[in-house]
Image (cartoon, rainbow, N blue to C red; front, side, top):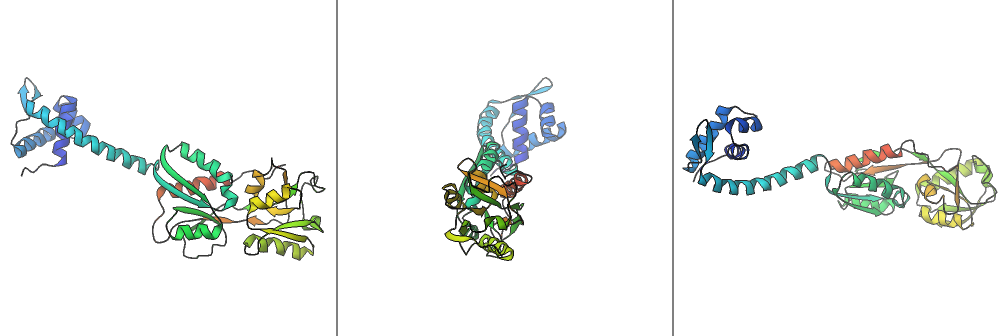
Length: 302
């Protein structure tokens, strides 16, 4: 069986495409003698005359033209592979699966994701909005490439990247007596019906501790695990609450007024990646771009 190598075939193809040894050498970045040697070796291996001398140049034989058609079909396949590799290298292709807690998935993260995808037309994408424990579970089980979950993360073995922390805000129904205040404090909520997060939420404990230290009594009638439900109840006029700034911003046009709250209670969340393997380049780029997008955002309506 004839022994040929890819460089010989590349040299043959370059001569066929460019029409001369000189031009082929320039395309391949080698010397003219190197091209001539590769062509001689290819002809010898194939026991086939591919070129005939005509004046100072080379003219392909009928056999060369037939062989070139087959080579070109093969190289079209290689070109597709190279193009795919370039897409992967520049993170414009492949599949990215993201799970995120509802505070992000209810509007803010989808809008960011849309812009990210517009710049990468060949990247396939899946986005799931689930509570933080499920985010962690899906990343652990390799169902997602990256997840965004509230801190602290229950599983210590997950690679994690902390995201920029933003302050939680007070949320009121439009027209509430506190709407005129520029900044709200615990004492402003004395006697108010308060819509709480469920006890399993880390945010619930942070908020309750602030009010306990201030000696403020609220009317605790309603609990929910989801900030969208919280804001929907606030919009109905049922009561007030402390909410993450992302959901509060989503409800700014739906009857909810957000105000800064002191002392500051951060909404902390992190990106988590599957364990025991390096994150995909596009997942890392997505997280870095999202963190940059969050920094400096004015998420408190005035």
